[in-house]
Structure formats: structure tokens, C-alpha cells
Amino acid sequence: MERLDKVLLERHPDFSRSRIEGLVKAGYVTVNGAAATKAGMKVGEDDEIEVEIPPPVPAIPEPEDIPLDIVYEDGDIVVVDKPAGLVVHPAPGHLTGTLVNALLHHCPNLGGIGGVARPGIVHRLDRDTSGLIVVAKSQPAMDALVKAFSSHRNVEKTYLAVCHGRPRLDSGRIENLIGRHPVDRKRMAIVERNGKLAITNWRVLSSGADSPALPAAHSSSRTPHTTLVECGIETGRTHQIRVHMASLGCPIIGDATYGRHALDSRLDPVPARQMLHAWRLAFRHPVTNVPMTLEAPVPPDMAAYLDENFSIYPLARAMQK
Image (cartoon, rainbow, N blue to C red; front, side, top):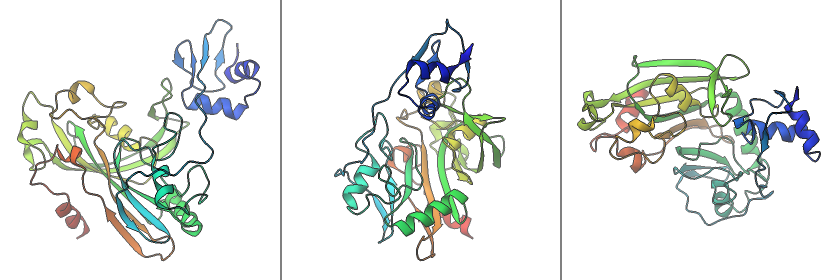
């Protein structure tokens, strides 16, 4: 038995150990048809090892004329309401048509702020998650925002999610470790070790026919029960809210990775993506230090699961009292 990374180094002498580790973590290496769990795992002579080499990512993204929904902008930052389906930065499989490409066209001087590959990017959203994302337009703003978002000081990120079922309680706090799934390396999971601390504070805003927030049809025996949940995160782990909601037995509708396809197919309309929206972002301006609170309206595809007379904004005012 030998270590997987040693075997791959012998087969691919042009690879470095860090390159191999990155391929394993990204799910590009399989052993006997299953994703490799770690670069140091033991493999035998009869094991079938396959490596998929992702296409190279351009060193410098090109500007592209892609429309942006600008919520706020000044000389140091721009806050964008990202639509679902838009990838934040170039990566294998999405080398163009990203938010970064759009930002480089909108802000010609953005290139190089915080690095050429992901200029101005301080935090990110999954491709199919909509909502607010702040981008630095100057190096001082970049430095201050990176420090604030990494320490989670004076930064509040609040999401809205439409989930299957209803949590047993009306609110709660989830605190555990999230890391790569031990078998499927493209998924995240709650783990006991080798993970990172993940904290989500959640509360039910409305649920089925008991609230005006969802159509009465959602309470029928033929239509799955759905619940609108507000999630405030104290950490920003990959897929954090999606994993945490699934752990409550209430996965986000439309979530192809952690959700319930059978229930999704019974909804009207059938969700085309995960119904998760980065609704509110509160932080201090990185240069002026002025407190800022910005909100993004619920997008139409998500609003389809809310009653036409329901508005999230009265709830926002109530929470601030």
C-alpha cells in the first residue's frame, strides 16, 4: 500500500504535492470510481485511479459588458445585487461571464485590487444564490474589508431561505464544524474533526397556511409544506446555510446538492435553483467607518413562493425596534 499523492507524483512528475492536494480537495481524483478522501490515503496496486485535469484559468480576467444591479457605489466600494446563475469569479468550467468580468468592465481601474485573479472580491456567494455582495474598488478599502470579513467584526450577513418542512422550534443557533464530505469531495458536511467552525442563527418568519407569507396551496396534502427562514451567519463556510438547514431536516427547496428532488418536483412552480437569497448586509464603510445597512429585494423566482401581499420590509423594521 502506498500514499495516493506519492503514486500520482510518480505518474505525473510535473505535478507538485500542493497541486495534487488541490485536485483531490476539488474532487478531480477518484479511486475505484469514488472521490478520493485525502491526498495521503492508502491505495493498492489493483486500485483504479483516475485524475481529471481541469482546464487552465486565465491569469487575468477580461472585462465583459454584463449588466449589473448596483445597490450602492462610491470611490472605494460597490455593492451589487447578484442574480442567481452568475458565478462570482472565473474558475474551471466558468472562465468567462462572471461577476469579476462584469466588474472589470464597470470599474476599469479595478484590476489588481487585491490580486489580478479575483480583483476586489472580499467574500463570495454560490452561483445559484442571489443577493448582496460588496466589492472593493481601492486597495485601502480592500485591506479593511478583508480584515473585517475575516474577523467577522462589525459585519452582519442575513439570508432568506425557503425550506421544505418546518423546524421543530421557531428559532435556534447551530454551531458545529463543517468540512469536506468524507466520500463525496464536492459536498460539504458536518464533521467531528478536520473541519472549520460554522455558526448560523436562524428563525422562522412564516410557515405554510398559518402565515400570509406562503400560498394556502402549500398546506395541502399534495403540496409539500414550506417555511421561510431567516439565517444570520457568524461565519462564512462553503455551503454553510445549505448544510445547516438540511441538518434540521428542512433543506432549502431547489438545492440540487443537499435538498429533496422528489419534494421539489411537487412544487408549483418547480424551483430552478436553490431558494437562498443574501438579503441584508451590514458593515462599516472601510474608509469612512460609517455604519451601512443595505438590503436586496427578494428576486421574482423566490417571490413566487411568497404571498403577493407579503413584504419582508415590515419584518426588517420590526427587528430593528
